[in-house]
Amino acid sequence: MAAQGIDLHEELAEAKVGKFHWRLGAIMGLLTLFDGYDTFNPAYVIHYVAKPWGLQAGQAGLLISSGLVGFLIGAAIHGIIADRLGRRGTLLGGLWITSIFTVLTATMADSFLSFCILRLLTGIGLGVLLPLATTYINELAPRRVANTFALWGVALGWALGGTLAGVAGVFATPVFGWTSLYWIGSLSFLLLPFMHLMLPESPKFLALQGRIDEIREMLTKLRPERASVYASAEIAVGQAEKPVNSVAALLQSKYRRTTFAIWASAFLSLFCIFGLSGWIPTVMMQRGETFAASFGFGALMQIMSFVGALVLGHLVDRSGSSRGLIAIWWAIGGLAVLSLVVMNDHIVNITSVAAAGFFIIGAQFVLNNFTAASYETGVRATAVGMELGVARVGAILGPFVAGALQQYYQSPTPMFLSIGVSAITAGMIILLARRPAAVPSNSLEATAGLREVAQPAS
Image 1 (tube, one colour):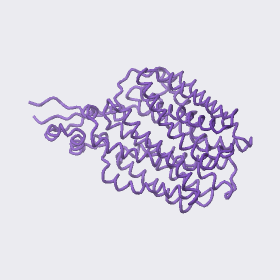
Image 2: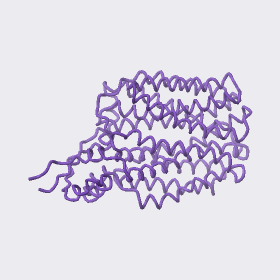
Image 3: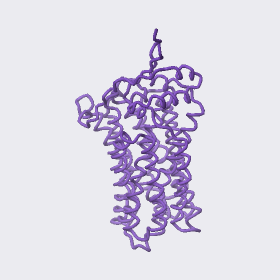
Image 4: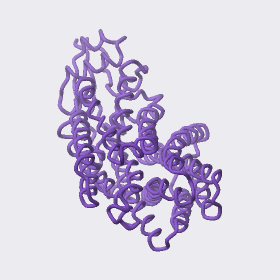
């Protein structure tokens, strides 16, 4: 007589955190470390190339935005590729593209145009890493620690990468020049052999391909205490639950207000984050800070962003009031940036920049979880993807607008005003979103949208 069927998602969700999870988290953390590092290092290039290349402030902003345009392209197309080639192959492809064009930037970027072109191509690879790493790690994370596991595995790596960019800017560029930033970034080549050897395929893709033996092998690694059950099980992949992949579904009456609120607040959030991060070293030198201190401000923002996300996430878990707390975080961050308009003091500079990282960037990490919780399973993946896509448009505009404002007014004051007001406005807008829908919080179900059943042999 056949035993009771086994739900693959439940097997994954109920697993204890073991060596396999830790190894996976470390790999994803290293992936996103290089993403964060590469995303923020153009801020430290501006200081060295603005005069030799004869750049106006608006053009200097494009040095940062060009990579973000590539990121948007990569983020837009990676889902289609991942569905055809698998999570593993797409992640490896993104890392290869990033590594190759990082080296080419160090060796061939000798003008404004060549730098922007190479940054755009690098960004296409980077656009794969962060979104797909987030999806990948959630598909394998145990349910009870899914958010925390993703935060430590993905967000920590990204924040450490941004911090490393600041450290490299302070210590490497004065000795070896700005190209040293990209030679350091090319160390991602060292990660590739480990990725090829150790990175497994995701359970969603294995299920879609009907690769039963590999599903059994993965379950055995994740839950070795049940190895005997999986060894004798006959895996039957059931009919996939068809997700709703249309953006139009997000504009239905029950979602419309929440959708527009999330899109607008995410756009403004990344406008603030990348506008400030891209220009903070240059602006702080204009405010009288030393070279080392000015470049260190970028690292300070990234360190504080992860701390802010942890604190906010903990408060949200305890109170359940995500909208209000996110709004407060952005409002405080906006006020911190506005303080730079009226005061120019070393302590004020440090405090305000640290607060901007803690509150503005920290809230953005939590907004992604809020978005996932605000939609039912069938539209959740589309909702999160659209939130990140719209936000990246803000990220592209942030550095460019900040540079254009400085060029026109010959002062960083309008930049601080625009970023501070935008952060406060984002906080007001997110309050318009409805409370998260009462839907299951299982991230595996949300991202995979499949129900695979393992039937033991009779």
